[in-house]
Image (cartoon, rainbow over all chains, first blue to last red; front, side, top):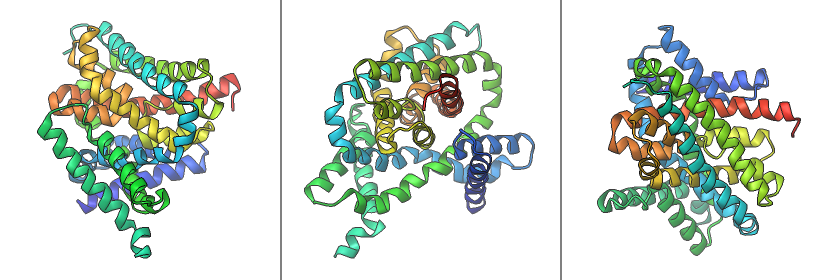
Amino acid sequence: MLQGLVLLFGFQFIGEFFARWLDLPIPGNVIGMAMLLLALAGGIVKEESITEAGDLLLKYMTLFFVPAGVGVMLYFDLIAREWLPIIVGTVVSTFVVMAVTGWVEQLLGGDGD
Amino acid sequence: MTELLSSPLLGIVLTLVTFRVAELLYRRSGVVLFNPVLVSSCVIIVVLKVGNISYADYSNGGNLLLFLLGPSVVALALPLWQRREQVLKRKLPILVGVCAGALVSIASAAGTAWLLGASPEVVSSLVPKSVTTPIAIGISAKIGGLVPLTAALVILTGCIGAICGPEFCRLIGIRKPTSIGLAIGTASHGIGTARVLEEDRLIGAVSGLAIGLNGLATAVFVPLLWLFFGWN
């Protein structure tokens, strides 16, 4: 467990380091994810060493979103002022994205699975 | 007493207790509208307002939990790696689907809000709404969005996908498990994935994969589009 946490935080740190150092537009944690994937593919990191810690974090990922949801209270004024574009934009876009993504994947599907 | 209010314990205990109860309510009732993230966020806001506790006091603890989203994103490499064979077999439809979804997400969120007269910082805040929070926050900050507003909109988007996603896909004729998973993961990231993961393992697997892929695609497309159109 500890080894897995060290690796996950370590890769995040390396990703954040590269993002800042090279002034990359991609967030550091995404770079960390890509580097971990490369390390797994290259055999540098063994899958077993991160499964316990990784599965734990992924299992409770939705919990970590809650403080971000509570943050909406800071913007009640702004949301009250611009509620129409905010709500309609979010709802419309969410359904459009689901439809387009699902249809494209299905049409290109072939026999696949 | 004031030290206890500003201690990280307040935010952590309040979030954990509320989330635990919300999760029980969700499981016992089986009502998808009682999404645990949505219910806990609303309940905590009410508790803070009623108890006259500031968001700053809450976030001393809340930010510690929020911080764990960072290594969680890194951990998304794990399901991707474990399902590499299934994924590689369908890499073309999956990649094309996610890229289409990412572009449509950016265009439809920004376009709809702009047409309805949103201010530039609100438009920017909406752009990464389909991407998982830690990535969305980074994108929003880079294009002049309001980071906490983006975070809240990401949650709202996730809840919409979790509450209506599977039903909506069925309604519009998206039937293949990989297509449903990709649609829900691309549109509504981890919160949508959490729901489908309970119902079908393959749908959940592809949905989890889509979180990382859409995060990557949007993180790459947004700066390129902004550079191309000279926005900032």
